[in-house]
Length: 213
Image (cartoon, rainbow, N blue to C red; front, side):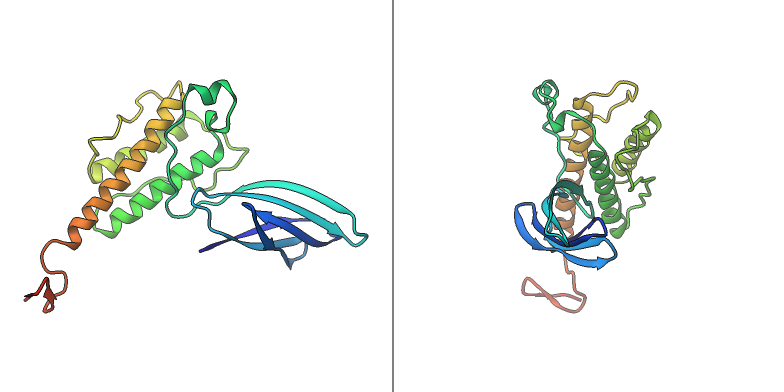
């Protein structure tokens, strides 16, 4: 699978070359000032562009861009620790891409459950950007979404309790939220496997050498 990546360049740019996540790609002018390439799908949803734009006079303009695209399921992150905070590592901050990952993973779980007849409907925000602030009301909404998923299905025995205090946030609460997502997906997948191996799944066919009627 691939991900379409587009960048906006000045009108005088005649060529864009470079890599996305370390792989050489071909950028094509697909609209005025819009240069587009196809990159291999990144499981993390993170795409690092190291590119050079070239104008009509062969002047070179280097760019280092990081883009995030989420769709479907993205592996949750729940191994943040104090070391990340003290050293100002990316994991030590709540970034918009973290919120996007959580929202899209909630959507994935709810869509999957509804596909199997579970009644779960969430209030999602799928357009977080760098300018947005995670107000208490937004974090409460996310926790409520997770609670709705658990109440509509099951709560994994390995899952931590959902945070009940949204006034003060820390990395452990964020870890707990993403661990709940991870455990719930595992639980759903176990349930799906049991569906496939319980009884006859094709009426009138043969299952395990036994006629099904």
